[in-house]
Length: 385
Image (cartoon, rainbow, N blue to C red; front, side):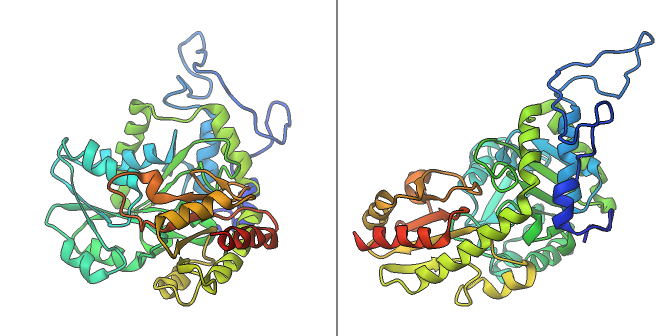
């Protein structure tokens, strides 16, 4: 339940940030495409909007909407042009000489931010198995300033004990940021587990239709986060990696159906994970909803359901996995996830040299199709290799 409004989250996703337009009564929010805003004769601004890079009415509505989903004030949310832009802003808010502790299974774009872009600038980073709290404890340094979590992770769906990492971070006065893209606010509540920052790629489930790119950062209401919030807002407005008004409107439109879409994504993914778990040509299934999955116990503690992505390792390695991906008919070979259509991709090929992904792994974003049709499609693809 959302404490600010006393309404449950399935209701919040429909109404947050979308009051009927005061001027026209329009139920669908207007799109304010203007990049600049007129002043009165005395130089004052009618609604405090100056220039679209620093603020925009449509972007403000989106930020209020996402903030309501995660249970914080509207001012504690900042929209960005992509999920990686949002992640990069968190890292840029650190100081030279600070240390970031990130998961060994981190998204490859996250690792590039830390090692290739901000490493030369002076930000230190190291990567550890975040599912092992003892390893996390040993990896801390005196200058560790930020613990970065991605749970479930991409693409192996490793599950991190969020509350356990938060406890380790608090012992040394560090911040904790959690990428909540895959779980969404409907399935996982990182602020309730003690996190300081939440990051979303709104390109994925929030947008939900594979037609918009965006990201968001949310900051918890803890007093210790007043200065980081101010710094992040400055990075957003001065750096200028902000979404267009139309992109903001598209994400808001997607959020309205988020609850019902996530139910079907999860239903279908759970059935497909069970299908893969008994298939003779599948070496391993990565899905925390399976009781056999190493992350199941922790996931069941901190997630209400287990999401819409399933990864599988195919026996025979990369050649056979690629052959399976080439034989499917309903699944589309494409990068990304969270859309209405089902996608499949051989992640190691996408990530390229240096990929840590198992060579036989296929990542599947499970869409909203009839699940029996998806199973039939995968059955014929596996039978043909």
